[in-house]
Image (cartoon, rainbow, N blue to C red):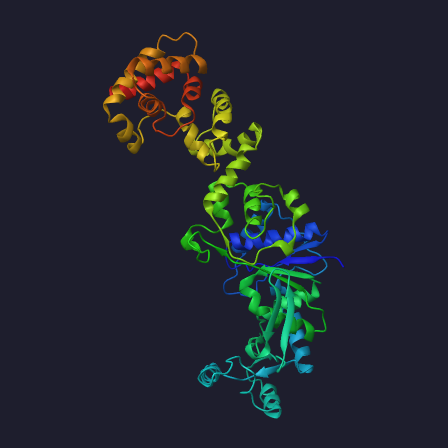
Length: 481
């Protein structure tokens, strides 16, 4: 049997981290088992589905490197892989289910259903609708023939139960007393999620459905539908939901959850794939870092945890820093130079690019998110016409600042060789001569040349900035004290 899995997002929003983890687990499982990974568009919610959201999903699936074998855009033997193009097929299945008595036309009104559930709660019985409000067969046939509007419901077998083994959650049992006779086709002829998803899974030969646990209660409905269609149900694996650091379900209140936001923040696709894989699955031996190929070779759905996983943006940033440090200098420049030039609003000159290249080994070690690079190197390419207010008040509004800047000018001006070694030697001797510690002696110099207390290593920054510019900036800051 060839493993066939699908990722089936609805284009009703941007691709978010929870959906991206589901896509990743499907991808890893397919690749680990030499299977087929399908990307489907569950776009039957016409009121909320947009092409903008669809494009965002496609763009970020490609950005993450989760290449699909069949599906939207690239096609395959099942047409467009968009549910909006398959309404005729869903209606055909609904009619077949009526003919086999696995479904029926339902005329129960919302008020009747609400009263049914209230009466059931009052009586201490299940509020799951069982079809008992429907008229007799003859009346149903007449009303349908007359063109009266009706939904189509699936007839859940009662008494009975649905049992299945979930790869993540193990043995599951659902008593049919707790399962509604659920709607599969609305009165306007549009399919519900239950029908469209199950028909597609059957038609596309999906062997394993890997999805979030929020759909666990839908699984008995999908199994019953597949069986009524004469198909073997898929094997299911329900992933735990992602939680925020506060232990509550991950949502926008915890910050950005869209892939596009993390991409704009400067997170690398390799880092977020690695991090998402660890949210419910372990590499073992307390490992945290692995390439996509390594994860494929070791991925096992049976070892995925059923416990909720916490999405921690700070750990993602740490892991992103690990991947940034693992870049070659050329890769780092390719990923950041344009960001620096966009920040400056101009293209760097050849000399400035050389300065940037000199700075790369220093800033790469200190970078967790790619846009941080602009903040670290901006001082090299712009005049310091204003200083960070907090940095100035913390460092320069002190008696030691004047002493430090005067002593730094005296120590650096005579230097014939402008090297990292000579600069460090001169400034460390300055500390000895003034009795200042490193923080009080060096921080004023750092603010003077960069405008902030945050910058790459001081001696290296001065060496790259050059002697004339360094002395000019220290003098300008000195004049303001």
